[in-house]
Length: 347
Image 1 (cartoon, rainbow, N blue to C red):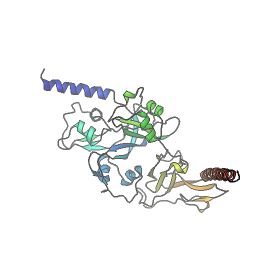
Image 2 (image 1 turned 135 degrees about the vertical axis):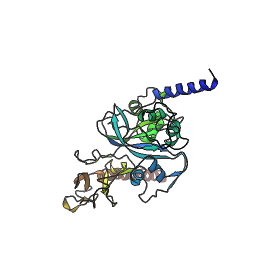
Image 3 (image 1 turned 90 degrees about the vertical axis):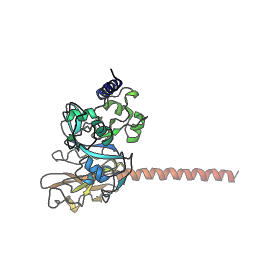
Image 4 (image 1 turned 60 degrees about the vertical axis):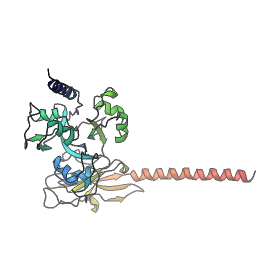
């Protein structure tokens, strides 16, 4: 057998082995959800190019996933090797999560499936998975202009009894589960369990791992099209046909804070009323007893209405108690120093 043929055979065998041991994202939930993938920029690029590559319908969705101002332009420059979080719609099928409908990639001159998977989409998917998703029997036989569905990994599953935002994180060479867990605020055992990892050497560099991101709680009704509305810490999302902007900040007691978006709605001529009882509008609050607050919160929407509800918030009380404890501790420190100085002065 010639050396060229032997090399080709070894390449195919190694590729098949890699595919057979690739980590898949378990997804047994019957519904779809919003998930995130971590795209690593290959070259200098901008948000417009990333939006187009992943078929993200609204730039603001991409900006919200990265907690950037809405004023950020599509032409905003992003240098190579930066991680950009991209929102995707996830659907579960045969206990595996994959992106629903998008992105669709159009084959360019000199493209190959390996190049598309490893470089264009920065290792978020394997070329064998692209071939399987598009019914391609020979990965070498693709044509310029061909439309390829890119099956990005995702999940909608509850983790340890909590709804989370699942994030596809491409593992860097030399990384450990402990480091990844610390970076994303989870724990090593949770990562190992949901990814089916039983030994450290099963963590594969340049392949995605499922990272559950803690999400803020919301008051959204179960009959609302956006239930359950989930946003990870440090992100914001738009809902109710773009009329409502909801932000997740751990400092707000892990409670989703929503307000009118002030952007043009996608399906309504104008946004419906967002009033609560007592003349409070969405996002506004009033102090009731002591440090307790009543907040006008987002509760979902239907074809013609945006629902709101009054929610009691006591997070300010917790912060106040913490500050009081800190002040008491400081007073004791000053008293101890005063007594010690007095002892030395009079002896």
